[in-house]
Amino acid sequence: MTTAFITGITGQDGAYLAQLLLSKGYEVIGMHPQRSTPNLWRLQELNILDQIKLVEGDVVDISSVIKLLEVYKPDEIYNLAAQSFVGASWNQPILTSQITGLGALNLLEAARLVRPDCRFYQASSSEMFGKIQHQQQTEGTPFYPRSPYGVAKLFSHWMTVNYRESHGLFACSGILFNHESPLRGIQFVTRKITDAVARISCGLMDQVQLGNLEAKRDWGFAGDFVEAMWLMLQQDQPDDYVIATGQTTSVQDFCKMAFDYVNLDWKQHVQVDPKLYRPAEVDILLGDASKAQQQLGWKARTRIEQLAGMMVESDLRRVKEELKLKKGCHDS
Ligand code: NDP
Ligand code: GDP
Image (cartoon, rainbow, N blue to C red):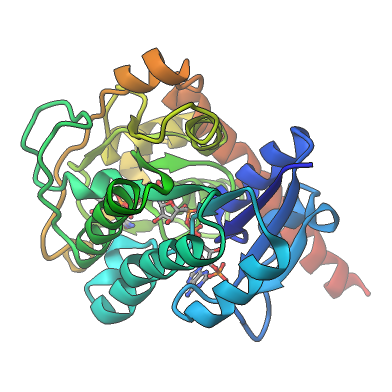
């Protein structure tokens, strides 16, 4: 049985990747940081919590990682752990660098010391392209990060390349463009919008405040993107790949799609709050995943309209369940 070790198991991608690997017969060891209450809702929603061996550990604490690698001896390591919210990275630049930047180095160093023959995946990000240098970004496009998060990801990306080139580690960096799902964190703009659509449609609120509506992202479905992570580690040689849909959409157009889904006019319910603008913006991202298509046989399957619909549906279900529970409490 192949053993996979996933950091960030409790996050969006951790949950989908674990589901994929379980379906392929892997033993999945999921590392999560110590919290007063563990964040298990995603694993519960996918109904896979009891199939994963959950272990406590923190990427900032290399000794915890080394001990876990010694005990579980994984064949594949997926480093998904991060402070992943760009907006928060200006308020917490040092913490972000420690987790998102140095955390990855801790993992690489632990892998080199304890499991030098393992295969290693690093969750790199299109935020590294930031102020874009090419209209459509490929593996060859120069980087220009615009946030502490982007800078931290650039550090971990180059460390991954460096461990491959200097220590011969089978280390791959997946440069993933934004990917969303019903399991996306609520602070990210797509989920903030679909949650608001559900609440507005159920009469629980009327307005949602957003920042820059002009920003454009290449948004895909997380369920499609985790397949590319796995494929990278099944190749003969380690390499870096851009993973993207090749279509870019503005925040405003995403709003329209999500509100249209429940027959509401987004203009009646969206307010722009300049406080939500970022100190330095990534105006537009658009990826070219031709290399992944040619070498991995990977292609995004889910279109943005489907994604928006899927997210609104699941938020509607959650809000209705919340209302039912509240009603039950009042009645009893
Ligand atoms: P999430 O924010 O949903 O998940 C991040 C995970 O990291 C959570 O499980 C979190 O635990 C864990 N974590 C946070 N701090 C630590 C720590 N110190 N030690 C160990 N674990 C920690 O992110 P996603 O699932 O969306 O993304 C997965 C990875 O891919 C991240 O590295 C992200 O930066 C990167 N990425 C994501 C993109 C996207 O569009 N989703 C695009 C490109 C890259 P807890 O739940 O307890 O906080
Ligand atoms: P990011 O690409 O990783 O930063 O993902 P986000 O979902 O956080 O943001 C995507 C884009 O939406 C950025 O350009 C933000 O400036 C823009 N945006 C506009 N309004 C909001 C908002 O209210 N919240 C967030 N998170 N982003 C917003």
